[in-house]
Amino acid sequence: MKLYVDLGKDSYPIYIENGILARAGSYMREVFAGRKIMIISDDHVFPHYGQPLMKQLSAQFECHQLVLPHGEETKSFQTLPSIYAALLEAKITRSDLIVALGGGVIGDLAGFAAASYLRGVKLVQIPTSLLAQVDSSVGGKTAVDLPQGKNLVGAFLQPKLVLIDPLVLDTLHKRFINDGMGEVIKYGCIRDAGLFQMLESHSSFDDLKEDLPAIIGRCVDIKRMVVEHDQFDTGERMLLNFGHTLGHTIEQYYHYGRESHGEAVAIGMYQITKLSEDAGLTAMGTSARIRKLLLTYGLPCECGLPLRDLTGAVAIDKKNLNNKLNVILLHDIGSSYIHPTTLGFFNQQDSYMV
Image 1 (cartoon, one colour):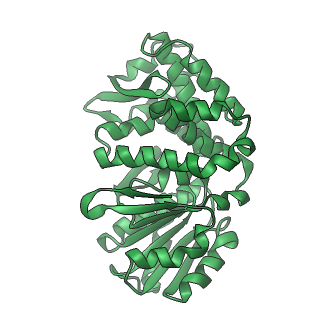
Image 2 (cartoon, rainbow, N blue to C red):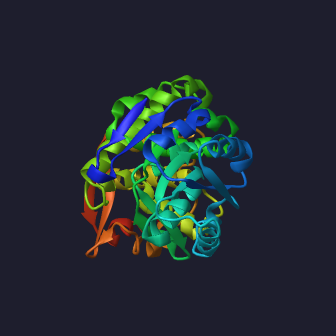
């Protein structure tokens, strides 16, 4: 499957196909005429896919590698100097290429390094987690975390190419398959009732695996359409943040050490829909359907925190604009909207537990 993100001079193709990683070099040559490539990966992914990719690309390019520790803690300013040092040592210039081979952390971090090093180096995304394949590798958002919150410093840098090989998920730990399903379910919630119903018709991830390339393709296509309408996240693109306002605060509350991103988003989707149902802003029964689907795919619905403990981090959320907090709500499954409100939305019930 080939999709195309139409952003004028920043347009790029996305390829989704089982086994495509073994032919990565031919696709890169379509978008890159330079000489040097720096592959940035982590110590979980590189042993599986880094060496074969290096060997393949070395037939056409001068290849270098940087392998970072896995985990959200790596996505920080403390990591950036080591990336810049590796790029300088390899004499990477603005005519060269950075390849992000990994999940969302590597994609965001390598992307931010590419956006900031020499004020911009070309980037290719090869996502190896389900979450990165359906969401973070597409759209050009890059970032690092601060102690005060997730993704608070970043830049927009559209990749030149995204290569998605669903077969790499065979080596992904089950927890992070579940993690990615949180984002898949999100797409059904915000834009595609048919996708949501398809997920409801299966009993587990293993049960839907045959349909996985098509499911990934549908999620990416939704994101493609949204990004084309709102490249810089000031309007419609905010719909992609359904569940994230609470999700990010849960991640930050536990210093990114307990819930994964997809797990936190899952909790956020369910809990904010319960709140919006109580406020008469969402059709009754919507949160129950979300809860049932989350449980089917091994995702949590609650974290046991009083809601009031999370509102401090919500106050500095990126969707808090002009003292108005834009939260993403559902009319019903498949139909989402931006609801301008204030922190009061989360403070209506002092005893509310998330």
